[in-house]
Length: 321
Image (cartoon, rainbow, N blue to C red; front, side, top):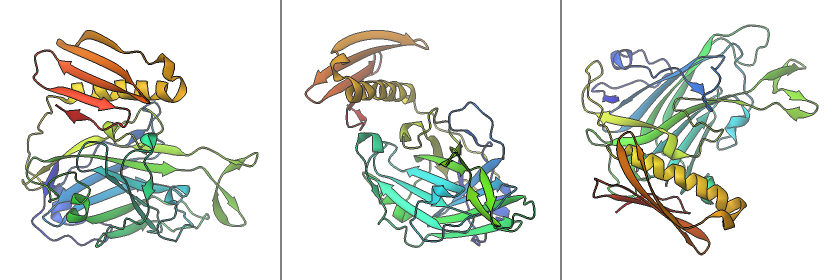
């Protein structure tokens, strides 16, 4: 739940205002595959007003370091914090923001996920974005042990609304968006007094990926797995009720069938066979239809007692018909 602040916030990386103090933290981040507990803690708070979505993150970190200073470079080659936002909640047209401890920003958007031939648009700049870093320790000093760093954002809602398929307006009470947060963390080594990503046998060790909403795979670009935030006009400290999506199970089943058949389409398309079947989950009765077509497939899923049918094809855009 994202509550609305009536008071102006100073973007300084500290989040000391009363609104921030009353806003709840998310649960601690988990491993992106949901298997291992992260070594260091990461949590996030969110607020909004008629102008901005505010995000405040606290990242536990004993070694504050970074060397990337040019905007729109590949920031995840440093330890970083990342935000992924899909205002239309349909996996198409979403934004991504990455930042390192030096305050170097990378903002980009994708028209669709990479797995369906989406491409990153690095020319997308969030005009008017404000952000600040606060460090609890010293940056790039290997001689000491640090505590954490925090980052605070004010992200213009009108710029995010441009990502919407329809009604490119700021959120209203009860509106829900898909969002996820990620933290990329590298093992490091010290060479001539400087921090570098650690190598073994000439190859970089794999990074750690810690997230708010479990992706179950090392891939942030499956937006259907991101968490859901709900905008509330209630003030921080008050409690609103989350609106459950009655079609959520049906949507997630369609996406699961989509991922399965997309993998077959890439590896062995002959294994895709047109079929119709019925099954039950949690006392709900579903009818699933897979149709093989030239260069792809079509999937429909209907809950027997519902008048709605969900449709998806190899392009991955879910439709309710």
